[in-house]
Amino acid sequence: MKLKAILPILLCCTLPNVILAQKCKFDKEDKDPFTNEMVRSEMVKFGKKLLWWANMEQNGQKYYATFYIGQHKDMVDMMTKGTKILLKLENGTIVTLETTSDQSPIRNVEGLVIVTQWTPKIELTKEQLQQLSSSPTENIRTYISGKELYPPEISGKQGRKMMDIAHCLLENK
Image 1 (cartoon, rainbow, N blue to C red):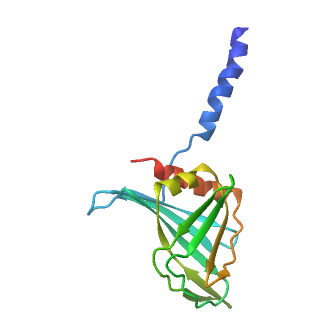
Image 2 (image 1 turned 45 degrees about the vertical axis):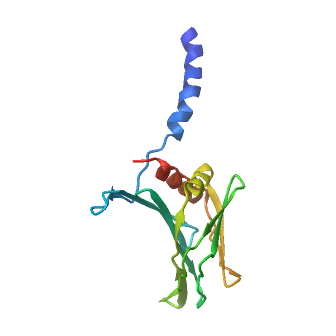
Image 3 (image 1 turned 90 degrees about the vertical axis):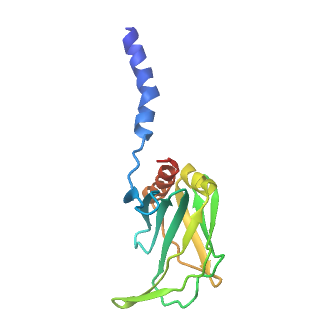
């Protein structure tokens, strides 16, 4: 009789840990042959049209996010040094990332549409990674030359993936 009472309690205590435990897998994970430092990276795509995505990476003791930001229009505006990329998390936190160099637009013709793209690479602090690992990302915003770029609709799965990647990068290997 006691076993029947203990079993549900035991399941309630251990099952959440098993469900929430995550295995960290990266698109790329190996040592740099020149520096012998660990290089790990994983990509997350945002929205249905997949014109925005982020590649989160660790290179030795430094962390980076390279954003691929695309728009279905012809734009000639530079993404200047100091441009802010704002990530709003589900818990209400807004993480502000700032570009450290100018980015020229890359314009391609895809069918009948011109796609303009910028690819800023931003060094992340551990504090920023900890913030990103604390809650799923629900929205992204950035401005170029005072114009807000069309933001992607981020699904819950995509926002959780950004959180999971940040969490995994914080685990030292």
